[in-house]
Amino acid sequence: MTPPVSYNSILKFNVKEQTLELTREGAGFVVLSLAVGLGAINTGNNLLYLILAMCCSFIAVSGILSEITMKSILIEISGPEEIYAKSPSPLTVRVSNRKKRTPSFSLRITLLPETGSGGLADREIYLFHLPAGGSVEKTIMLTAGKRGRIEVTRCLLSTGFPFGFFIKRKKSRVAWSATVFPAIHAVSLPAPRDGLAGGDRRVERLGDEVVALKEFKPGDTLRAIHWKSSAKTGTLRVKEFSRQGPESFTVHLNLGAPGSGAPVEQEVIEGRVSRAASLIYHLIDRGDEVRLHAGDYQSAFGGGEPHRAALMRYLAFAGPGDDPRAAHRRHHALSAEQ
Image 1 (tube, rainbow, N blue to C red):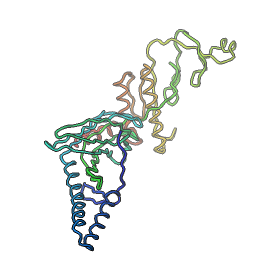
Image 2 (cartoon, rainbow, N blue to C red):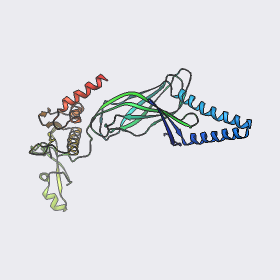
Image 3 (cartoon, helix red, strand yellow):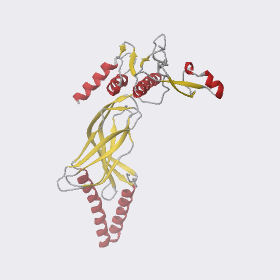
Image 4 (tube, rainbow, N blue to C red):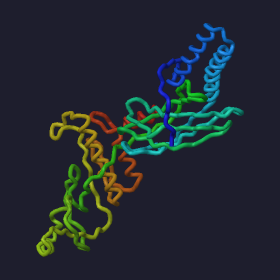
C-alpha cells in the first residue's frame, strides 16, 4: 500500500513544469537555521557558525539529491483500448530509471486524465527504491466518468527525498487513450419472444415445451402464469419454456422527446443510452441476437463479443444531431495525429 504523506506543503514555487513546495517540516528547519544564524551573529560563537553551516548544507543537499532522484525517469502507460464508463479498468504503469549508476528513491506518480473526461485513478503509485537502469511495473484501476473518449497525456512525478524538507514535482508526458463505452447496469431482461420495453414491441410465441414451474417475479410475462398450480399453492407460479435456439430482439434508441423529437436534457440522453447499452450487453451475454435502431442507423442482427463491441462503439458517441460513426472516426483521426 502507498504510505501516507506525513508532511503538509506551506509554500510553493513554480518553474515552468516543475514545482517546489516547502513542507511544514522544512519550514521549521529553515526557521531553526535562521535562529541559529542570529545566535551566531550576536554571540560570535564558532560552534553556532558550524551548526548554521551544517543546516545550510542540509538544505542544499536536499535540493541536489531530489533533482538527481527525479532525473531520467521514464513513465509509460498501457491498457485496454476500450473500457466501460463507471467501471474500474486496469492500467499498467511502467516506471524506468534510465540513469546508469544512480538509483532513485521515494517516487510518487499520479495520473492526470484530461479535463472533462471524468477519469479518476484509484490511487497514486509509490516507489521506495528504483535501481539504476531498472524498471518497475505497477497496476492501478482507472474509472472513466462518462462515455466517449478518455485520454491520459500527463502524469505528475514527485519526491520528498531525502529529508522531506521540500516536495519537488514535475509533469511528465505519457500517451494512453481509450474509447469509453456507456455504463452498464442491471436491467430486467424480457422473457424469450416477449416484448422489449423501449425496444422491439413485436410479441411472438414462447418456447415449444414447458420444462419447469417457478415462482412469479417482477418482469415475468403474465401470459406464462400457470393458473392451476397458482390456485393450489396460493402463490403465482409461471411456466419455464425450453428455448429453440437464440432469440432476436431490436433495441430502439430515441435521443429526442417522444413524438416531437425536440431536444431533451443531457442527463436524460445519458440515461437512455446507458439503458440501451445495458440491454444489449445482457441480451448478448444471455445468448440472444440483438440489433440496434437509432434514428437513421440500424444494425444487423448479431451476437457474440465482436457484434456487442461494434454496437458499444456506436453508443459511445451517440448524441442528438450528430452521427456517432463520424464522431468515432474523428476521435480515431485525432488519436492517430497525436
